[in-house]
Image (cartoon, rainbow, N blue to C red; front, side):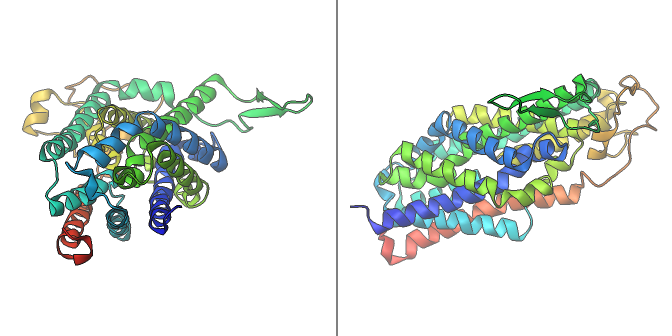
Length: 392
């Protein structure tokens, strides 16, 4: 007979997954919807499919890491403690939402589980150290890869990706037969098709990477407790994410989801590609990664690379005579623009400070992205350590 606690645990887990679907669909498919490449229902459907594929494949590694390896004794994951951990994940994320900061669900989940492990004296410090090291290293990698792309390759990429939508639809649907067949509309050009395919493909990659990392945030405590097997846990989580994508994600899709999707289309593709690739790589290692923090540093790196393009390396290091670094520089390249060689003196074409990369805002975001997991960790530890019902 299924216990009431297990049912409650599954419902809380699905609620966390529901919010994950609502918050990650916008950043993944915002550029595609904003470019009229796909509709909102199509974006939600793709989010559900590719999230599930990521969760079912590489996501298992992260669930195992959080549910069975982060703590030495998995017996500490009782149904009660699993529900409490999920509760702290939800509360901490709520704090981030109140401050308007897209907090890292992965860091928050690890913090809540680590608080439980500390209270019970079963936290594996070696595993925790491995996770923290990658949390530090991965944003640095994202920053430098994006900086190099911004400095040396962004103009060419922009010429390849930049597109303007034609007046008609992308496709016509031929309904003359038994099966409707989509056909390219007569006004659709090759560049438009290529750009559409690119932004949709990047959205699918982001959805896949979200599945590889974020599924553990919703189901790892229940899997670690042994109350729910891996396969049904992933299935429940995938269903809840899909429901969230079809419902509460509609507003995030309208506003392009996050700061990332407010960037020029080419910049959004670069940031999403770099960040998603790093998240998938870390998920293959079983490391729960923070897409939000990696993406934030990728934005900064890309903006820095664009703004310092007309400068030599010594000038960048010394900070002599260069323009202020802003992500406005991401929009500096229009199709067909010829940039001066690196090191040229003329910097008139480099934009001055704008709205997309504000150092104060960036500092606030990074600060809150670290404060929210601390709230989850401290709250979890104090509760499991001093509340008698848990007996630690």
